[in-house]
Picture 1: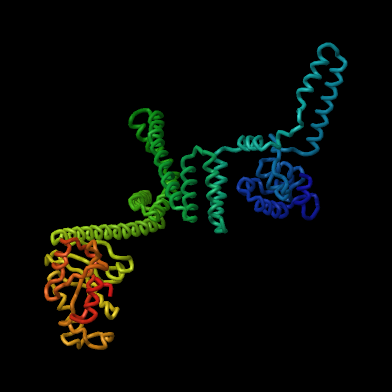
Picture 2: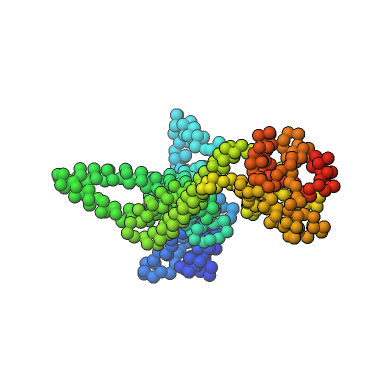
Length: 516
């Protein structure tokens, strides 16, 4: 303390002016990250006898420093190696007074020792034994033990005071917006809750504030859990407090009518603090609703937003506006989810209708030969699909045309089950090959001269093996159904090979089973 006093005494006049005291004290508070509330209650220098605020004497400084653990650290915080210290059971008095008391104690002890040595008998050994017991066997200072210091601190403050200090530190961190401030705030609020304060409103506020810190960290699940617990603490507190308050008021009243009046008065006296608590609960409900929304828990989000709006009542317009915004977002998400559900139900119904139509026609449709072919034929950007028109009771399918001689292909997006392949070939090539593509340099792909085939393997699957002639002048899908009765399976969509009839390539194509 003498060294600390010298550090504070910037001008070396042996007196700490208010400016000197505040300058160094606030620097130490910031260095040790202390809560200044407890210190600032005694920050002003005591008046001198003539009522002029000149500053702190050394004795007054010693007294201030010895008041609590906060004031010890506030005055000696710059001594970085000081991590354990002794908080006196009674604040320190003037040095001269303590010196006089120490001298008196030493004189009394000397006199007692002298009297014990001259008395003889049993007094001598007993005195020696008492002296031996009083000495520490290992010389350890109990006030340097961390458990001892924690116990002393707990005796000097209540769980609520310690929790309030941690809450203040967490709030300060959240306001600072420094890097890692939210993580620091979570730790402070958690330490406040670990003190197990008996004040239900304080517990609820700590939980609501920790939910805000978790929201900043995008820890949605933890934010939701803290918000729900904060609301549960409030509900439990109100359920317990209401009957107890009314019962106490009624007991104090002279009759039933007086009891009702007393209960009403008790409610009125508590209305201010409840209003403050409700504001904290509104924030908890809003944060919980936002976290539940991020987690996709729309039912919980809706319940929390409605609870928050109920708690708002007629006030808290800012919070109510935020809650209404969250509620609007929830409603939009619910509408989107409902639209997805309706669309999924419609798709399921269409798929069931398609499956029934395929069964009724005896058509077996299997998997595509590979994923690339599936994407090309019926993928998201293909614009084609196998579908059933229930209004016309008609099946529709895309068809892939292969021209093996030219190594080219075409894709017909939609062929109804009653349509002929010849009509499509005429549209594509023309009667006299007048619409043939550039790759038909010989103009031999005239629609009447083209012959379609299905190429099946030994198991009836599409592949290389047996070439089955198709009649282009009749409907395509019924011909496929007839082949399915013989074991053919459509590989996702019908794959039809088209060659020029009676050409050399057709003969080679048939000889090799479609491998030409």
